[in-house]
Length: 470
Image 1 (cartoon, one colour):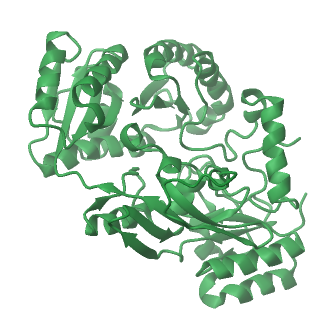
Image 2 (image 1 turned 90 degrees about the horizontal axis):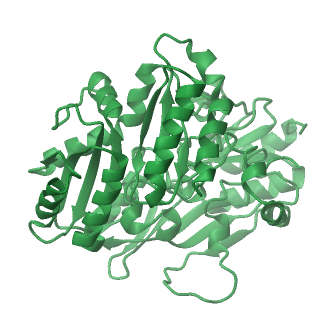
């Protein structure tokens, strides 16, 4: 067990950031120590809020010297506990929420340079001010921050067209465990000079270094969107419809979200949102085209109806309707809270295997927990599904959540049998740390541990996350 930092060490750390950059009282610390799902509640002697990379560097130099464990945190929107310190108070939380600058926008180079604490929404807005698009889009974009997006390799609804956070990053600035600053803040599209250090840190969840800045890709801002909520009879019909859409509109297909009927029911019941289509279809798709030729979506839908892939569809007639369609999708996760406990799985399988996965996973969890209500939705354009299972009506919430490991094992077994991954966009954190033993080969784990030992020999960066104990 790691010993808590001494009073002297805490004083030295606090002196770096000053009183504006320290939170000591329990009330002030609380929002940083409890995550959205309320699965983890940590403790820390103090929260450090540095104002710039130089302060992060000096903090890590002291932490390295004294062996003080540091847990980096951006927006505290992570869903696997990677941003929460342990409960014994031995770890210091370092928040980047004061490092929010938009440093530069280069419209001609289609790039934007930001500090890691900038919210995703602020980066999107800065790009839009220059008639550009930063396409990463998540339901939490108003509060999640770029450092966390990169540290977890966030995905979202536009991965189909633009890729994950990793694909949107050109350059990084990272503070290493010993306080040295690794700066690769370059907007180069091509740089074939040795090892790709940037991608070592993207997706590492703060265990190898603290991302403090980034250069990100921008894209032309779409002039029009065609958005439709579509009723389909089955997941197989949805996959076939995606193929037809991509054949008809190619790269104009920017989003393709699968939504089950129960999700529409939950959202309309609890979130004050109405659906443009009547319930009654077992599955729906929310799809969007960007800058497609006039009439392409309508014709593709008409053809799909003739083939029996689509039973009904509503096309947004204006921006207000378009946003209302997306509100249905964005409030799916929040709506589940009103139905009791929800055991959640962020998984991916090859797109063609989505129907087989759903067909096998649904009865498997029903056999395990009769009466459970499964809500399988997500980004089927890239094979990423959120297979969430709400508790049976009337069951004790905690008793249900206590079965999380057993149910996850069942779902993950189906995922792996379909050649998939147990973490598509949320990361490993604490939640799936022990699963790494069975999904990664000994060679993979050895290489990962080798990187950890090289970059963080004292094990002070986000301990207890991602890698299982040896």
